[in-house]
Length: 199
Image 1 (tube, one colour):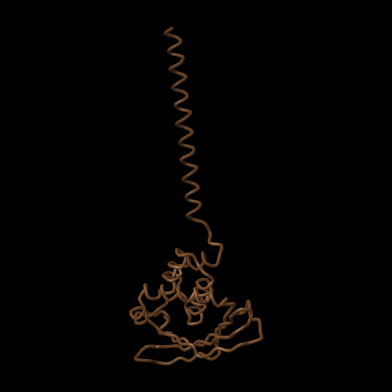
Image 2 (cartoon, helix red, strand yellow):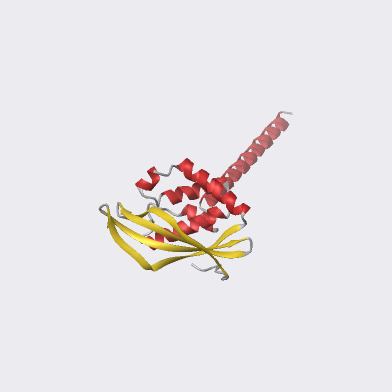
């Protein structure tokens, strides 16, 4: 009887070791999965823009700043999720001058984008592409700041019709980085061209 009890005890101890080993293996597997998920390479345009390190890899030229600005807006106006929208707007604001940020609160900008996206959806409007006119960049000094003025043509589709919308952007050098100081719409026109895919 004593020998049998010892045998059962040994078997129970062995089973406990097997269970513990199984739990350790599972724990290590889950940790590896979490690590793999956290280091996942961004694949979509939204993921790439959100993952971009704007502190270490800030765009060097006015054109590069506006290229990222346009790419972010294309994603926002396609109808990003709430979480992605907040992250994309955060990236946008890193390209604004302190003056523009102070005149455009995060809450105000977020609500404005939500309203504009809803109107885009209602009007069946989509930003197809954009062209940054680098051939006519104007550099000048405004209030002691080095500034650049650049025009962008946005190509849109609205309920089957194609449109061009022209906007003028002013960027200013702030802490040795080109930041967006302001922008205004110049004009819009209907076009028969399908400009999808152009930049």
